[in-house]
Image (cartoon, rainbow over all chains, first blue to last red; front, side, top):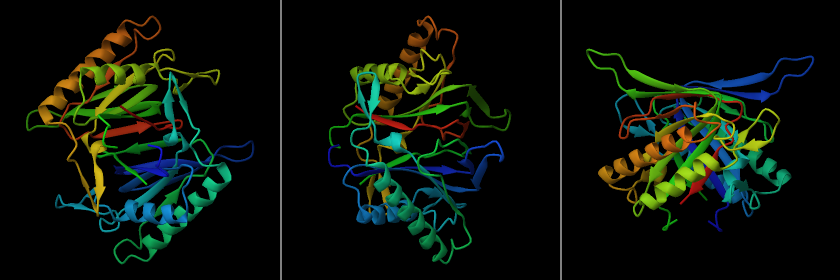
Length: 162
Length: 162
């Protein structure tokens, strides 16, 4: 555990919806949505770097986690499918008694920078991929409450640590 | 990693729905639903035992992960809220190249027994709790595809390893 620098939690979905801006007095809340594809929860711990970001984007987009029409497992790029990235600092918690502690989470500003780099890299990779270039990469707002809903045909939840 | 015997993944929800029996020629698919409460994804690895099950049920039900009306974090028992247990063998996977491998997952029969013990223990605990006794504990069918949907007000995803 002590050497983990980041966590990815990956779930397949048929659709998903995430709030990216809460309602204000003047404006309604804003949401992004995706269709069939991959939900990517992401959390950075102390020691994470741009090198970690690079490995994480490769793992999220290239790992064969998505069931294709003919029953084979393919990457979300080859599906091709949409990607919804959700910052999830709680994933860095450790159980202590009856509460979770987050001592190993990265500092907020550093985490926000790495998060933006991860989102940008995923967008670039999807846009540069022959099959996936018309798919959407959507992303939650770092530091916000992630008001979220999804429908799945089996989430096939996977954890990958870096 | 090598000593991990089980994983719990916990998410808050406002509602959730899970298929517990696929449709057949004669019957429609069967679903269970919960209202506000906790989604508990569970995976057993080699070495998990009834002692592990006991610790996992305590952690899932007693850890303060749920936002109460007054903004305090309380356990799902004290919320009180419903519980939806989802078997999720994929959580035991390790990334190898571009595929996930499941070499450390527990044998299916042993996993099914531990899963049933976990579900039973959660039901007993909730039914025996003064505030939570009228809440629902619902559970997915071990070995099935977990067709699943949820709405959250922020999943606050937590991972606990045993």
